[in-house]
Amino acid sequence: MIYQTDDTICAVSTPRGIGGIAVIRVSGPKAVAITGTLWRGTTLSNVKSHTAHYGEIIDPERPDTPLDQCVATVFKAPKSYTGEDTVEISVHGSAWIQRELIRLLIANGCRLAERGEFTRRALTHGRIDLTQAEGIADIIASTSRAAHRIAMSQMKGSISRRLSILRQQLVDISALLELELDFSEEDVEFADRTRLSRLATDIFDELSRLHSTFKTGNAIKQGIPVAIAGATNAGKSSLLNTLLQDDRAIVSDIHGTTRDTIEETLEIGDYLFRFIDTAGLRHTTDEIERIGIQRSHEAIGHASILLFVIDACQTFNPESLQLLNETGSDTGIIVINKTDVADAVEISRITQQIRAMSSFPIATISAKNGSGIEALKAMIIDAVSADFPAEEDTIITNLRQAEALGKAATSTQELLTALDAGIPTDLVAQHLRETLSHLSSITGTIPSTEILNTIFSRFCIGK
Picture 1 (cartoon, helix red, strand yellow):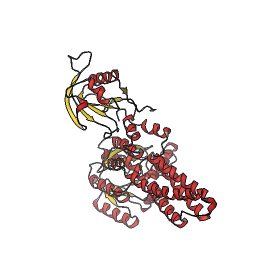
Picture 2: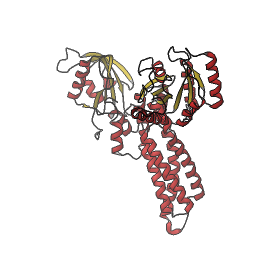
Picture 3: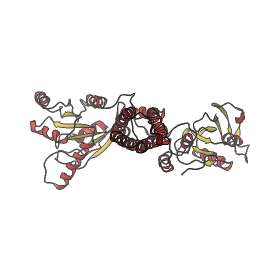
Picture 4: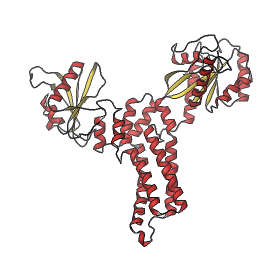
């Protein structure tokens, strides 16, 4: 993908299209000099780093007709995003101006940047590590306050710092084991096996804890799945439409109208939720509806929260909660719907019966007129807040990192087994090297071209 790092690259760093301002980024050893050939104003090679300057962009072949009035911000190595000399040129957002400026930069010695090349250069020059680079990508893609908060934490190095401590502890022990191997004929022991076992246990526990956060972190990043389930005609699709304030799902009095899952996302509070309207749960001989119900159970099984909808206008049968038990969900809210037309006494009786049979919280709503919806949203946020980690916790949101943590935990477990069995030092050292290798792959301490190419291919050009 990207191998050359000693040339000068350029790209538009703002989104495509017409806007008030567009930013063209130039980075590399000749960034200031090349920009200077197109610049009319203060001599950029003489200015201080991290300063902005007003001037004009000109075509050297037509100097009397400026391309645009603009602002150039100069960042000098090594204290720039990429670790190289960098100039960010803010021009008016005309698509033509952007194209012309890129053309002029290339004509005067720049190369058009590849996807993620600016960030990859930041990695190459030691400005960030791999987890921070992935945090940057997650910030750009974040769709909720919670996802943004986690990505910001990763960009600032929360994962790196935690893994660095674990890695250094292993490096110290590994050095002693390697020393033992050098003096194997002397039959000496530099690394205390009891201390090594305690350390390996602590590291295994921490790696397992970090690995276990991926399910939560991925849910926050992609949208926390919330399944809307219940018997047919209870108002599940109406609830989805009311939450979204849009007629997304077909609503009908005919039982079995919804025969497949329907998904839509909605931001509530700090979180992005992925609501899944499911087919009504009932026993049926209709093959198509039966497949839809099977998909409902699958969606419920993968959901973080279950909204189980009950029709307040129907005579409540305690056995209907058996459908809830069959879902196997342990985090949910029972939603009593149609309170706008149901008898208040009957609603109270249903509520009391449910409380005697289930520990799930209960919300009373009318999906038709929207009453109780805001209270239901608050209950959904409470359910998330109870099960999701505190703000200061380190959370894994990246599948690559999670897989590497899982491998590191496995090799650490094998190390513990080896220590208990009293196997030779060279085999203990091998398990230790494997754990170190997996930890190093997370932060990029041991770089892999294939991993780097995969990660940065997902970036936008200009970042």
